[in-house]
Length: 390
Image (tube, rainbow, N blue to C red; front, side, top):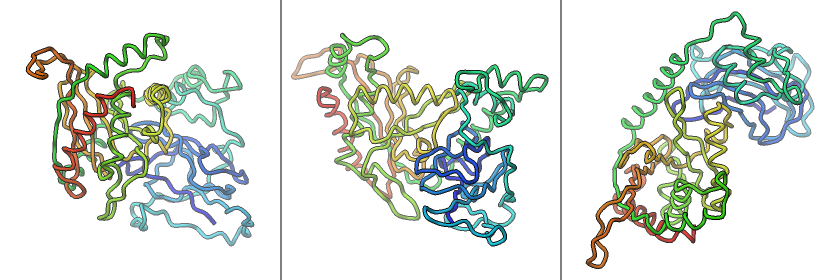
């Protein structure tokens, strides 16, 4: 028997509220399938399963809040027969690798059939976000959209006569979760900070030419060059790219970059763009635009929330000259970018105005040091002088 547990979707997540099951008992699933929608303090997240199997029993009810690591469902492994009804053991909810204290464990109960649709319900991102705001159970709504998809209007009709919670309350809870994670980071991680000025004339000139024949919707933004440059620099400095867990650092073979995205109601999330170093700029631009859109619509996947191996924050569009960020545990580094602005620049004795960018690194002294961090920033600067190679 396989156990499907609530995964950790970030260091600032201790629990999650089940919004909807996307599977029913007897339904086969494959690794990567979305099996549940879970509400965190930041967003409603499509939770993917990480193994193949057949759903045997749903243990968490829609609307129930459970801790990270709690067993939410039991599945049969491929080829495994279902046990007799009275032979199935009642699993203990867990937090992380160890069992949680009894007082911290939410009771496990079999979900009622009405909360487990036989096929995945189609829900627009706007409808899902609206349902979270109003506290509406999507499983009880009949959709009126294309292919019977649930629309925002369907949710509003279902919630008629009910008062919606103030968006400010959700923003306050998010701020509390972020503050708790950042406090932990500053308490446990010995940070060091470096910054480097980066000339951007070549990169901007290359972008101007590259975008000349592209439609407006397909043009590349400077942000995508920065992300690709970070990923390529990490190949030579892998100690900046990975996770520090249980006193050990594990380097990641690929750069899954968490992109810090501000939310309209306040706060931010940093979901991952996967394997950034191997993708062409056009593909990265499409994925980045899609990630920002879905993030602000409240439609993210668990792999995007759980997989980042380093975070990049770009505050240049806010007019910030530079940013020194706080590492998001269990990651070991964060790269920050400020605005691109013309600054005095001396090249071979000649003074000119140069578009400049401040790149910063916040890194974990348990894994790297200022020497290696400085070399990493220097490689990042060099990558941006050769934009045609990105």
